[in-house]
Every structure is written in C-alpha cells, then in structure tokens.
Length: 351
Image (tube, rainbow, N blue to C red; front, side):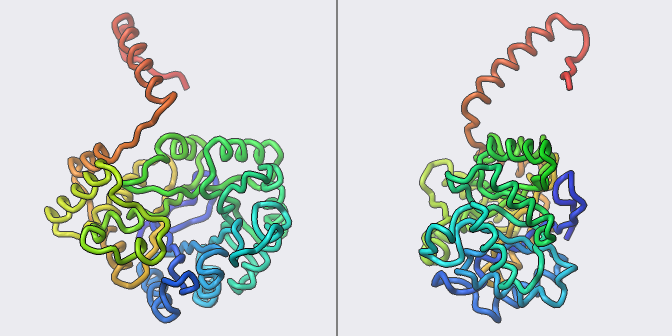
C-alpha cells in the first residue's frame, strides 16, 4: 500500500486506503461480530493500512469500542479518526446532538473513552446541523486541539461554500486549520466534481471518499439479489434508478470480464486512479463487512485500468456540472477561440 500526507498542509502520513468501520458491530441490526471485525482489522494492518475511520454513531458506539480494543497495542503507529454530530445513541435529545460546543465536548470525551485513548488524530464534524455557526464549530475544535485531545480538524458532508469559509476564517483567526473533507464519491455519485473536489485541490485539503462501490451497486450483486446493505440497512445505497447508473454498472461488469477481475475491483480501481489524478491527496474509505470484501478491495490496488477503460468509465459516469460551470466553460472556449485568432503563440492563463 502506498502512503501520502493528509492534504498539502499537514505532515500526517496516511495509507492509500482508510478502513471504514461502520460495519464493526451489530448495533444497527447488521454488521460484523467482534471476531470477524478483528480479522478484517488485522488483515488491513498486514496489508500496510494505517488510517482508521469511525464515528460515535456507527453501530451506536460499538464500532468505536471495537476499534479502541483493536488499536490499543499500536495506538501511536495508527491514524485514528472519529466523527461527532448525530450522537452515539438514538433519541439523544437536544443537548446530545448537533455541532454546538456543548455536544462537541461531551461527544469527544465519550468517544475517547470508547476508543480507549487520550487523543484522536482527526476529528470529523460529521454533518452540518443547520443551526450552529461555523465560527462556534471552529472555536470548539480549536479548544480541543489546544488541549491535545484532537490533532487535526476536518469536515464531512458539508457544502463547499461552508468549507471554504471555514478554511478562510480559521486562517485569519489563527485557529486550528481545516485539514480535510470527507465526501461520497464513486462511479455512480460524482456530484463532488462540481465544487467540493476543485475546492479541496485549490485549498490543499486532504480528501477521504466514502462508499466507493455506491453502497454495493457497482459490484453488480443487486441484479441477482437484494442481499447486502440494500436489504439490511436500507440506507446509504444506490439503485439502478437512472439509465446512466445502469449503463455504468454494465460497463463495470463488462470491463471486469475483459480483465478477469471482479466488478468491485474495477470500480475501486477507477476511484484509485481518479484519486491519483487529483492535485491533493485523496483516500478512498473502504468499508468491508467480511474478509472476502476486504480482499476484493485489496485486489484493486494492483489493478491498472488502461487509458481507454478509465476514460470510458469517466465519460459515461460524468455528472452535469450545472450553473455556472457549463456556461462558463462555453464562454471560455469562445474567448480562447477569439484570442487564438489574434494572438501569435499559446495563450497562457494568468495565475
């Protein structure tokens, strides 16, 4: 497994994959029991992985408890990230959910207890709550960084305008900087191409990409059965709800047959290559529920799609960039065409 720094502005060295542990535990009614989760964890570490992703809400706290047990012996060799916002238990009430400083403090303290550690490397604000000002979130995280309980601050599932404002405010105020973002990204969910990924590239933020298989859709398994996340969790999953998604699944399965690999490996290999082409570090979050799924992800590490295969998958999965991007692109093409007719030599963009 290769390694990179988490974004351009940190020295935090992380592995090519992050291990998502939403399937560690059975509190949601589906997931991996302790022994199976430990086998998955150990196999990931043996493969060279060092970046563990969890959250207080995962399996209602069971994920953090299992992760805390598994990482304890090598805590300082591993990069541990957790999230807060939604609370570890359902029906937590007004003071136990959201991004306000009160819940942030309580959530982090309880996460540290479950994780059996005195600090987390990355604290993710899991979701925007539509109430808490970004200044309050930044100040609260800055306090935790100052106390040594958190090393890096990052945001998950936030819109680009709030993230860019947060990065600017933290820079101006001298608060703990925004180190990274977490977004959903796969061949069937590329909305992040519009704003989030260009913003991360411009600001040098680290990126982690969750659900690289579209909740299992890109494995092709839902064409013969509904068993999996679709039947067990009934959330965070895609279906063949559009002709484009069906075309993407068709293409992934076809390429998999051509190269003698599984559809999951082809879909993951595309995300891996897309990550390498970004101008900032980007790490897929893999979330296996069993060892076979983990081995599928690991098998994608040495799968190199041909340029033709990569471009074909990229073209059929592209998402509409919408306003103002498409209009701007058309205008820019017109401007450049006009300039090219009048300027002797190449047109060089102004930095």
